[in-house]
Image (cartoon, rainbow, N blue to C red; front, top):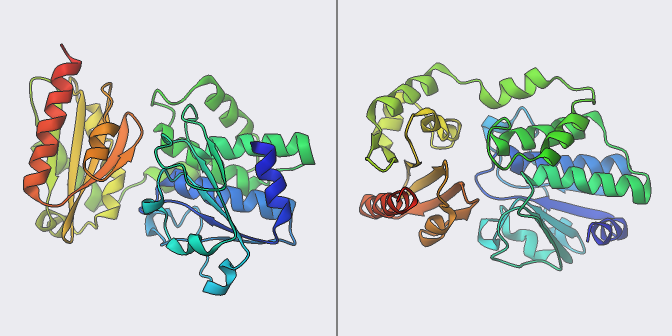
Length: 315
């Protein structure tokens, strides 16, 4: 499959890369890392990375703004996106051919070519694997910037290599990447430094989260609370893992009110929670998922379901 992808890349002069909405470091790392990889090895090709920009990820790169005409006869590659509903920029449908590269469960088998590896720690790790195949097959090389982007994506999706998804292969990949010329401290600062307002909100989370005897925990961050701390919904992404430091916690959900909907951010230290996310119009990894609640009453149902999952897990 990797060689099929490489052969397909060589056939197109116009290539457009997509990723999921509400991007995280792996979405940017895999998308822009692949853009850098293709452009570095095929400098005459027109390669674009599209989607709505997240200001918190500016330290990585910024998406391209392109006209509709660019999609005609273009190869579309979608990274780190499990289903078509979550593809950022639905103009991908106007391309000539679609390739899916992802590490989430393959519930939505879209695309003309599909490479899905749920054992990969991140989609960025898969892009590095594609590079290694290209190196053997076509003599590809990787630039320092490409290495920086892929390293950031791997760090983001493994929680700085703390999550169980970080395998021996992940560490070996990271070991290869850090041999390139980029500043790892700058990457970590860009990903984990917080403004004081976020630290204050983090303190609020620690003071107000609720956890039951089964280790199921939750916290509701309403629009009023966001306004009080002067924090946007997207900025709260840096705080999702905070409750993982709590002793005895099994799984947790952080609710973030955003307009007419409520973001549901689920994390776990053991029980599988992506099926729960799917129940509420979401999805993701077994231990890290996201969903959407239509009301606070529905958010309460998420808490009930999470409590039941933790109860059964601890039996």
